Image (cartoon, one colour):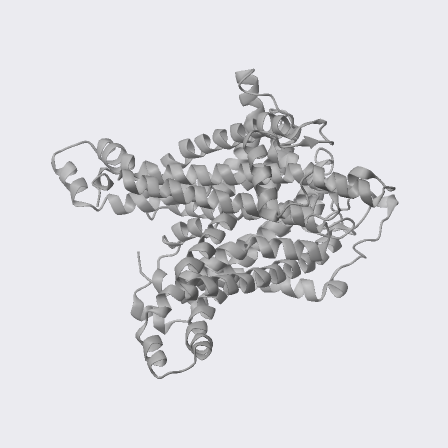
Amino acid sequence: MTVQITKGVAAVPIAATPSPSAKSRRSVFIRRPFFTASLLIAAAYVLAAIFAPYVAPFDPVKQDFNVMMKAPSVVHWLGTDSYGQDILSRVIYGARYALIIGIFSVMIGAVGGLIIGLAAGLSGGWAEWGLMRLIDAILALPSLILAVAFIAILGQGVDKVVIAVGLSMIGPFARTVRSDVMQVRVQLFIEAAQLMSISYLRVVLRHVLPNVIFPLAVQVTIRVSEAILVSSSLSFLGIGVTPPTPDWGLMIAEGRDFVSFAPWMSAMPGFALALLLIALSIVGDGVREEFDPKLRRDS
Amino acid sequence: MLFKALGKIAQTFVVLFVVSVASFGLLKLAPGDPIQIMLGSEFSQASYDSLRAELGLDQPFLVQYANWAIQFVQGNWGTSYVARAEIFTYAFKEALPVTLTLASFSLVFAILVGVPLGVLSAIKKDTIFDAGSAVLALTGTAFPSFLLGILLIWFFAVKLQLFPVMGYVSPWENFWLGIYHMILPGLTLSTYFIAMITRLTRATLIEVLEQPYIAAARARGEPNWRVVWVHGVRNIAMPLVTILGLQLGVLLQGTVLTETVFNLPGVGQMLTSAVLGREYLVVQAGVMMTAVLFIGVNLLVDLSYPFLDPRLRTSK
């Protein structure tokens, strides 16, 4: 759902883009300082997630009732929560859950969207019409509401959240894949391949699919942040990941009840989430503007 | 034009049909056998079969769907055991108005703030003000609303004690108190839309102000404010309405989260407690209400174009 507006935003680049000739000479990383900084931030999150046991100063689920709800200090850099758990350690481990859930659920959405989008784009006729109405129906529900409905059936837990968020993202992926297929299937090289009596399956796999996969990969990078936002929203609502998992959404929700005397309980994991989302959305915009020829106009 | 409109309406009903079949099917996928739950732990096969027949669960899927759809349209949505109420009353008459009030309040607020901000950054293009509003817009669209809500509670309600921490008063019953309670949730929900509308207004207006008729208006000696606010700003209506239709989903899911942050008894709270209490009928009611709202608003958006842009009134 967010893609339409980001398009509106992206149409107006924040940094003025130099002329096309200068563009090709300089590296992306120099041309787009915000993009580079965001990429580094995202990389830092990935590293923190991978090396969490070595980076985190404490055990993220070790409760210590002597230090409950302590403000940030030299020992506990980001303070402690209502169970005396170290918030910094939980935030670091939380990166693991956020990234794993985000990446895997986007994969589910992309693969599901690829299958439905290909089927809709290639079938034509009534089958295409029916599949399009199905996609319309899926898109009639915001991804969070759809994910809530799937959670109602599947139950709670990290794996369930991955499936629910993944299924809820199929709609937008299917729509973009289908419109890409529509553009490819009328191309001359497809007609040529068919005239050479290459098998249908081979035409699809060798000639249609590669033209669809690349824009899909760009979509995937853009939508990781949406998946992370929806999954942490589920946890925030108390129906996603279950305690004591160090999930940011869950930590923000737990802190909400103590906001008057321990605001850091919500704020610290919240800022960790917000920084990652902002970085990912800048990276996503950058990737799209670099690779999407449709957006490559200097406005 | 009328023919086109009828086509749109027909298509809307098809999508509505698919959504309702899907949400009915969703209920069928839910774990647990409803008959077993109703009968308890000990029952005979005969009583199981008779109840199954009585509830119509032995019928084919489409017949069951038709029966359900007829009941649903009549407002027989079942009973919620957690809320101890008819789901129609609980979901449609109690929860939905809260959500709609919050959503429309936030939207109006976002337009009132976003459009002038966008106009200002278009006029002051490439100044510090413009760059600042770009940064704010980026942060506003990516910042999670539930975090923003908690930060607002902490600052305005706890530190400054200007606003109530949570709770809901209907503005329809007590207008000023209701608005007072709505300010923090409204601010939380509208931030994203203020950011979005600001950017949209800016982009549209910059393009519009380069049009020949704007130059013509200036040449006629019309004052600058009139050129910008009368000839320029009216062009924002179309893209604004389009994007608000498309972004309604974001508004609705933002409402769900904001309601949870501020403890407002709307659709969001209803859905959350229904999931925790495994009340599939309530989840289904929430899903259906959201879908109907989304589809209905987008139909209205489609139908409103000829009124917003006279060029679209001529039928092809």
